[in-house]
Image (tube, rainbow over all chains, first blue to last red; front, side):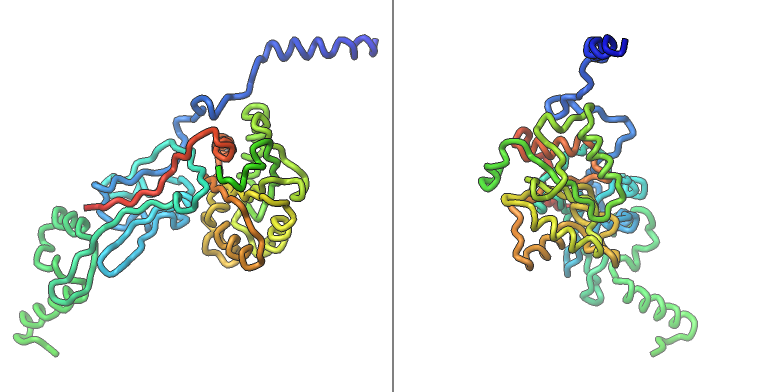
Length: 176
Length: 159
């Protein structure tokens, strides 16, 4: 009996294989199967981005970073370090970041992994220090018109101005 | 394909080297080798020793404990050798890029290899946390020259 079963086994296997048919996907030559919840790389809209740094604070692996220089602030996105958690999309105040379903990110050049958005910084009118980005200042002015008096100064000058105004009001002269 | 890699036109034999990863990428490698995705269509085969390997699959951010073993394994593989950094940990340290016990990705590993005089002919990065099996297949197809490279560095001005 055992001998017969052994002899018949290949035929049984053929029948099973015929029923199940081909299971292998032809992936590089056809579209990949992606679930709707899949999270791929992010895309930053450079026209909407204000350079506030909310995404930089939220990013767990520091894939989004600020590269500071004297008059430019550059937002650097490193796909190689990104873990595709999409936290930046949740925190972005202007909805500049959108998530894509792109995962085909393999490359042989490490420079391909970086993408940059260059912001220019604002200058303080009293001293020559540079502060937040120009678009950030516009955004703040739209949101709260009260800050217009102080908006063109850096935080240090703003504090000094405020203290001086207070002392003039209370004491009558500027304390030194 | 760079001219150095002419000899890897045929089947790529890979040695899977875990340098301290969380095993998610390792599972995805196994997934890429299952009949559903079937990386062996492209001749990819896992081998048991780096001496038989054309490419070395690096997963993980290279912990200090694993570093001497990693260097030995890369040294043992014959030229031309490809290094494939898998996942965000492999390609640039990922979430462990500044921790005390890792060297932080393949870029710092390459510097150490250069100091020791170990040459690497090509290096491929596959971002993803963890990588999808399709992303591994895409990278294999990229090495083989079947598909085009899609990711590109862009510098945009905000104003």
